[in-house]
Length: 311
Image (cartoon, rainbow, N blue to C red; front, side, top):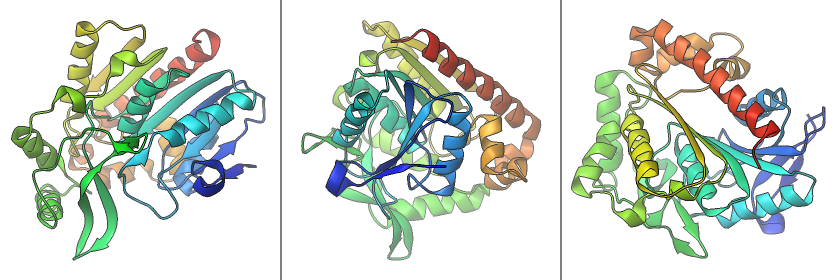
């Protein structure tokens, strides 16, 4: 696949643009993977191309595997470039932490008219870094948010555990449950210690077009089911123009990817990978697969409708 690469120093954001061969005036900003040109990013591009949209893959930065004070201006600059290059409609999709980024960006920039958040949160939390530090693979960064705008960190929920206890809590829960990673206690304890304030909540009522939220009750990274229910309530409590669509599965794990996308990423053994990653997928394999098949159709329908109708 041909692509155009973008760097922060020269273009104001880190990403890659992949034009759909069939021709399209619609583009999705996709934040799947740790780098805009890694395997996961490329496979998400292949999947989205089949839906007839151009794709701008983005990530925090080269060899930056954390999320801390990510400038929303980078999304804004990517949007402007897409508009200047024949894209009439712009959507955004993210999963996990980037699902939260997708919602946040869409609440700031009205040019985004389709927002898909897979296992997102409804609030912004403290920034973190990944790598190796004092025997830890991840640690929080003091004074930094997940995102920033106009040079200022966006208000965030601080984690109640500092380095290195932050990673020790995750490691202990992961070992006890047998999951690939389990950080739910980290988030639950942090919210108990610091109830989320209005400033820290994502203003989803400001999102335009269609907002699709997808999560599962058995997510062990955080309580995305609770967060999605709060977002539904927020929409009921605040004036808004966007159409909210949401689904919460009893079983689906943190990997609520469309089934065919997951199979594109892992042509052999996609179901086995999910089972190895999460205990819930081992206990309820058919239910998890059924959820992914349903997600597949929901995302396809949302994109198809957006291409036809939404502005």
